[in-house]
Image (cartoon, rainbow, N blue to C red):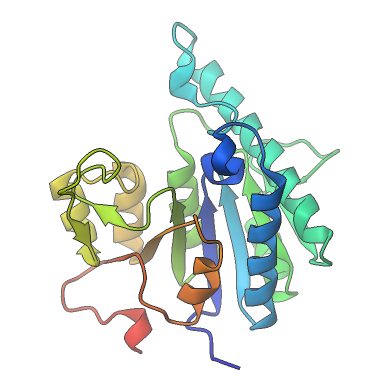
Length: 246
């Protein structure tokens, strides 16, 4: 069996990724395919934490005319729906899972406690972080960066609708340039839409690398874990060695 490149990872899944080709709501086949890949890398000995978005149900910025705080809280609740759906898919294939929420709702999930989440990971349980940071004005990208720093994840696996980072939208521009590697400063200077600037700065300050890849093929998750060079690798310094080369 091939040796995994990482011991502990944080997988960031957008809400749109869970919707599959539907574009809205939940696609059972897509969620089940993701769950199978998570089980595969767990069996390799990798500890997996997940942050889920809620864009397949609601985005704060879509609440036109609505109080921003209220709209953001609605988005946080959408991530809880996705977290529970993913938990159900994982437990259906015998993976022990815990959902932890930044907003307490004890009847359906644990409150977020860092030490408890780390203990779950050490016991080979998948931990799903939902409800964002629990605060308005912060995205789930920022949640991913924050939780990755707190649990000392070695990398953030950032699953997107596109297969890598480009200088412009490849779905619109045929001449879009694909980046194989970038530093965080590159991302900020070029204004690339990878993560919001708060999340990018947090990753840069804590030297947490990011692997951006497409979730059109869920097997990309395990391919990255096994060291296959796909997507875009984002890291701190130009002279930093890529994890895959170690």
